Length: 69
Image (cartoon, rainbow, N blue to C red):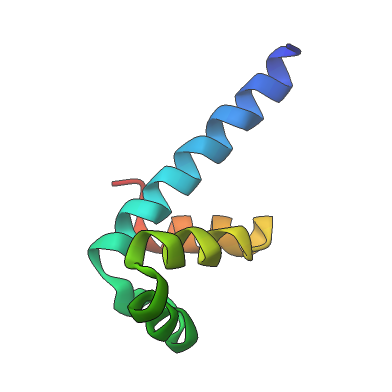
C-alpha cells in the first residue's frame, strides 16, 4: 500500500487499458502473428496474449506511439 507502488500500479492499468482499446479497435497494429492468432482464438484473447508478452519498455513505447487517448 505504499503510495509509490499504488501510483505505478495505476499507471500500468492505464497503459494496458489504452493498448487493449487500441488493438481491439485496430488489430492491424499488432504483429501479423497475433492477427492470425485472433482468427483462431478471438480478438480479445489475442490482444490479451499480445499484451502479456510485452516488456514494460515496449508497452510504454507503444503507449507513447498511440497516445493516451
